[in-house]
Structures are given as structure tokens and as C-alpha cells.
Image (spheres, each protein chain N blue to C red):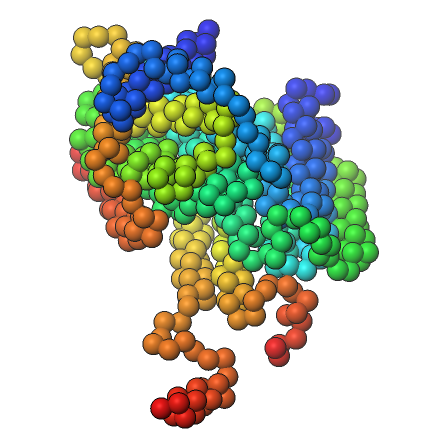
Length: 103
Length: 190
Length: 298
């Protein structure tokens, strides 16, 4: 069992855990998005570790990583668009105030 | 067997997790965004150490720009971007700590207790890797590539459409009563 | 040994750039001027603003210097004369240059001053304008070379230089690299007369010296990148390869400085509008044309 693979998977798990803590405990939309970025980073690291150590000749692994990176950028873009619209309407992006649909 | 590669991967891994923790522990918002940037850079450095060169360079390049944009959105939206007020902006802390810890333990258990099979210690040459990725992108995964392109375009148009201010002669009132109030006020002051 | 030689030639290039810039701005050609101004900067008092974000304040200029040096590590000055011959050289250049943005944001936010902060965020706006204009011409260049290795890119130009093969890409890359190095007319972040120096406003003493040194290394690196991608690198009749590289890099640097002397500063909104509405379609057309040329010409 190779040390590098196990250590990469553990680091990916740690990033995932920190990301879940952040995404669940923060009240501001931008901080929640940072938590989601960390979750996706953990998944990305696991994917690259699997590609490099278990199946280095399957190029579809790199393709998957590209798609995850694209998704990270996209969800940030759309999330910030929603944040701008919400800020323009309400004046803040605190998620506790957004718990109900009525203002 | 501890090789030099393992030591560097360990170092960058610890750096990535530490910067990730700093993101949520610091009070200053811009420091939080820049810490996330350095966490992703450490991740990219890990990829480079693992000799997955193209993905490492791509990760470093993309995350620098993305996290800087996150920094400016922080400054735009947060009420205390410098962190001098030292406000605590969290809720349900106990629940999220337990959730984070349980997911970490679960993922580590999966990683440690499963037999992953034969591990290859020699990486593919970088030039061959990039070439293989290029062929894969345009040959077998062409449909995925084009769908990703169209999805990106749709997301860009959607985000711009949501964020654009409605352009009209008078600014749109939130409810109709203020419109009537404005009209009455104008008539009275004539 | 090679790395040391390249770093020495980089230092020499930076010195010549300082002399050139002083000549173009002041009108006087003094070979000893950089030495005197460096000594003056190092001898001056280092004023630290009140309540800075110390981590960012100290780290900003250093990251600028490191980013510029990392970008210079993948540029070939002669066959085999390169610090790090990476398999994704052209993309690594781009990745290292993305950290110029991080450095300027840190240098803008750190000093806890209004002018510096505005300068830093203006650079982010500039980056959104020129980022695509740097990456897409590099894509077209890599298409012709069928590789991202910078040595291969230079070798693919042995018949026809890229400036004649892809003139549109050259124009876009030249303009975008002037924007990346925040040289006039794109010097919104360090506007001398408007923002009182912008990002450089709160720095003094040796930190300012490091900031200016980082900026000059960045300019030389971008000129070297233009020469590698578009002007044929070390190709040329007669003289040794590294002599040709040096001559071409100095000529490109002089061209960048001269363009800045005669054009007014471009506003942020104008820059964004022109780059996104005109620049990106032109870059895409460039990729399309290069693709057709590669298929048609054997």
C-alpha cells in the first residue's frame, strides 16, 4: 500500500471535512461558497490521486478533473450573480435573513 | 517507503489543510479569501509533485484568478471586510463541527481500510500525458467537451442576466403603492 | 550553472530597462542612474502606515518578484539555455503571471490606505480585461508548434516567424502584456498623477525598491515571452543565438516603453469594453485563422 496514495486520500478527506464545517456553519453566502470550494477541492485531490496512482494510462481521469474545475468556476459565477441580485434587493447577503420567502 | 515525493506531498497536504482552516478562523475577510487561494495553490503544488503536470499548472492558474475575484466580492458584500470589528458570524456551530468530523472520519476509514489494488509508482511522461489528454478531449469525450462549452455559455448568460440592473427611465419601485404616492405628490406640488 | 547565467543576464536586462525607461521619461541617457536611484531608495526612511495589514504589506512586493522570476524560468534564451524546461511551459508562464494579480491585491489591501486599495482593485478590473487576450494568442501559438514546450515553440518558427504567421495574435498579446505589466497607457494601478502613485503610494524605502525591481523583472519577462512566442526566439543570421535573443528583447522593451509615452491613460470602463467586445472576438478569429492555415499549408 503506497504511502503517497493513502496520504493524498487522507488530505482530500480533511479538506472535505473542513469544507463541510464551513458550508454548514457560516451565515454569509460568500463564506458558504468558500466552503463549497473546499469540498470540491477535496474531491479533486482524490480524483487526481486515483488517476495518478491507480490508473495512470486512462486519460479520462484527467477529463473528469477538468470537468470538476469547470464546475467550480461555474458555480462561483452563478452564485455571485445571485448574490448581486440579492444584495441589490435587500442590502445584505446574510442567509439567516433569507430563510423565508417573504421579505 | 518514504520517498522525497512522499515528504513533499505530506508538506503540501498539511499546508493545504492548514490554509483551509485559516479561512474560517480569521476575522478579516480578505485574509480569508487569500488563505483559500493559498490552500488551492498548495493543492496545485501537490499535483505538480505527483507529476500530473498539466492539471497542477491549470489548478494554480485558475484558482489565483478565481479567489481574487472572490476577494473583491467579499469587500463588496460583507459589512466588515477588514475584520477589525471581530464579529462572530457563525451559526449551528456544534452541528457543523460534528458533521465535518463524521465526514472526515468516514472518508479516512474508506481510504485506509480498502485494498486499492496494484499501485503504479512510475508516472507517465508529462508530454505524453498532455498529448493523451488532448486526444481524449477531442476524440472520445468530444460530446462531454461540447456540452461543457454550452453549459459554460448558458451559465455566463444566466449570471449576467441575473446581475444586470434593469435599465428603465425611472427606477423600478419595489411595490406599486410608492408609484401612486409619487404621482400624487407630483400633482399636489404642481 | 545555466540558472546562474540566466539570472545574471536577467539582472543585466533589468539594468538596461531602467536606463531605457529613464531615457524615455526624462530625456537623458545616463548609464549610472539606476545605481544612484537604487542607493537612494535603499537609504531612505521606510515609512510604515498606521495599522497596516502587516502580513499583506510585507508579502505583496515579494510575491510580485517571485511571480516574475518564476515566469522567467521557462523562457529559452538559446537552445538548451533555460532554467526549467517544463512540459507545459507556455501554460506555466501564464500561471506564474496570474500571481502578479495576487501580489497587487495584497499590496493594495495591506497598507490600509484609500489610494492603494483603489489601485489594487483597479488591477483586478484590468486583469478581467486582458486575461483572455493573453491566453488565446498563446493557444494559437501552441497550435502551430503542436506542443506547449517553449523550446518547441521557438523551433517551430525556424521557417516563418509567428509575427508574420499570426499578426493578429501578436498585436493582442503585445497589448495584453502591456496591461499585465501595468505599463502606461494601462497603468491604472499606479497612476502617478491620479492616485498619487496608487499601489506604490504607501511603500517607501527598500520595500519600494523590491516592488519596482519586481515590476521591471516582469516587464523583461513579458518582452522575452513576446520574443519567444512571436519573434522567433534565438533565430537570426550570423550572430550567436543569445545575442539575437538579447537584441530582440531590448527592442520589444523599447517598443513597449515608447508606446506608453505617446498614448494617454485608458480608463477602466473603456479598457473593459474594448477588450471584451473587440479583443476576444479577434482572438477567437485568430485561433480560427491559424487552424485553417495549419490545415491548408503542408
